[in-house]
Image 1 (cartoon, rainbow, N blue to C red):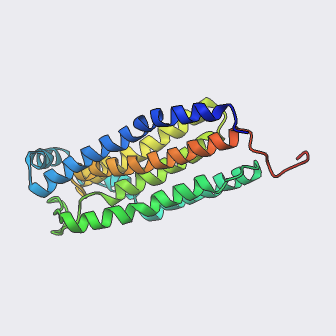
Image 2 (image 1 turned 180 degrees about the vertical axis):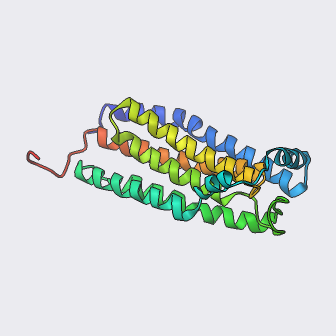
Length: 232
């Protein structure tokens, strides 16, 4: 016999689909606009070059900030969060405890799948602060930082009970991502548009992770029986 909530889900499903798709569509449109301007050498590229000249000042702090987007730094942070979330989910008896960590790992794996072909296709040269080369658009370091630190935050937030701890975690994630982004531009490793484009890509991937986490939470809170039959 269908549950009383089934008709409501059939009604609300189409209504919620629009808002869920609106964010990725808007971000995709912004990313497409930036990419078009980069490929066509449009007015945004000239504004981008002016902003880069204003911001670029290679120094040690900016280099250290940009290093936070290295795979060797960001990926271990995410792996720790993935492992902790998996252990907590399994210990709590969730049916699909593996799904949120798997979604987070998949999001990070998609970063090079998306970024590397775009670098090859656009062939954008770097700023005057780096040796002559192409393949700077979009910024792989920015996308890696945003997806790794953002996914770790999404996985850990439900496990923190204190509101203050949650706020600290979100602020720390924002500081890391903004620090990497600023460091890359300040050091001259990337143009500002390279970073902005990776914000769009990374945000879409994080929305996918968030959707998986929301679905997993709904399933676990809907009264799905746990495999445990006795007291813990």
